[in-house]
Image 1 (tube, rainbow, N blue to C red):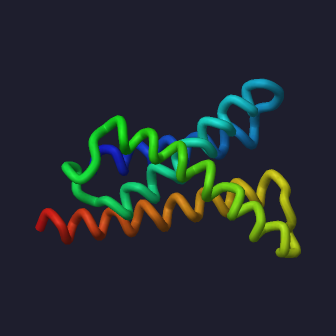
Image 2 (cartoon, rainbow, N blue to C red; image 1 turned 180 degrees about the vertical axis):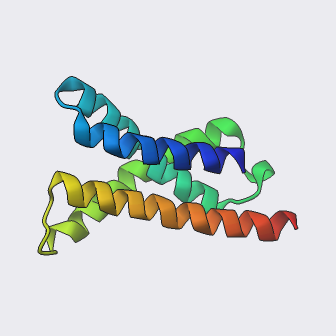
Length: 113
């Protein structure tokens, strides 16, 4: 459960930092937010047991799934009235992360109960 809390807090902290910073710092924080968190949340939802994947596999799959999921979210946003802009991307990726973390929490709670 600690890993879910860390991803949740880091995502909630990185979104305002990305909004209120600029230049290279925004790029670094945005890449950290987009290239790891969505994939880790999805991996946590798909494989709720800690023993099902090792640490290295979980991290590698997190990067890979983030690279797969974020463009799909962008493709969906392209066909909405909001388009591909900073705020819709941040809100949609944060929403995806929160939903996947919620699913992961309930699956882990059911697995370890």
